[in-house]
Length: 404
Ligand SMILES: *Cc1c(COP(=O)(O)O)cnc(C)c1O
Image (cartoon, helix red, strand yellow):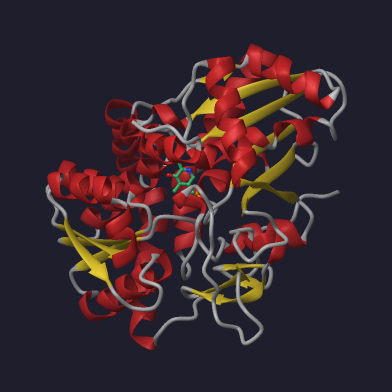
């Protein structure tokens, strides 16, 4: 298999991506595209971003050999395997999302923007954006579905402590997709002074590219780290996929190496045979959501469906267009893991490695035996631990019938 060529039309990944937005946003998206091209080629900008990633975020994150996890996965899969964990859970604020937020807020400041807005589902991206805004002294307003505001009280309080204003959104199902629509509406009205920080590799061009470039530090580090310890590239890279930013971040550096298998793990919720899942690439159709053409979860009339997953960060009925492209070209493969399997993955990582990971990341861990079973003996696998699990302890306790 040859690696897919770079997209020919800017903002397109094959037939996916693009800009399906109101006319009024086009000049701002053009301005953002140009600003990113300029900033990413400017050594002064890169040096400042690198300094913040090291001094503030805590990069590089470790890539550690997981001996006891490897042994269990080898036993279950019947394949000898060496698993390395990329520890994004050790980033400041506890997940990979800060890599993107720091970069975008730094870019917004360079563009002379004085106000930052963001959408958030579970609140993780809202907290990371509020954190970056506090660091730069910029006002921050976060749109969040009213249902999510109710469900995620702790993160709403965190954002407020960080100085952000949270706007509950009552439209539609009052969840993430409605918050994103409302943030786009705010941006249309206030594009002059406002930058909109999108939280994943979704949205209209240039966001899928911008967010991927800012998260690509994960794979760049992992590539150098694995070559240092193993003296070669891995056989596979595994990451969970919600919108797809931690996975794209890990994959990007390996896309040109066809021998490295790229595996994304979606949330199968109650199961792919039920209506309650978030497996957009496995079960969705091509459509348009939040300004981009990609796979979406929708009903027969094309109405966007509600997604479900035990992990709020995977609970999105869309997916970044580059993942749709990697799927169509066969460069990446997408699997899915149910809520129950993810909980078992969480418990396995806790018990074998002493790491309480995010329930999102637990999907990647849970998929390891089925991944290993397709690889030769002696395979080297990198699994991305996208975040830490503190935020999920209450959810887990409830699922396991424990009263805290
Ligand atoms: C938000 C989140 C995800 C899902 O988002 P992607 O854009 O798919 O990476 C995964 N893991 C954690 C810890 C998150 O907070």
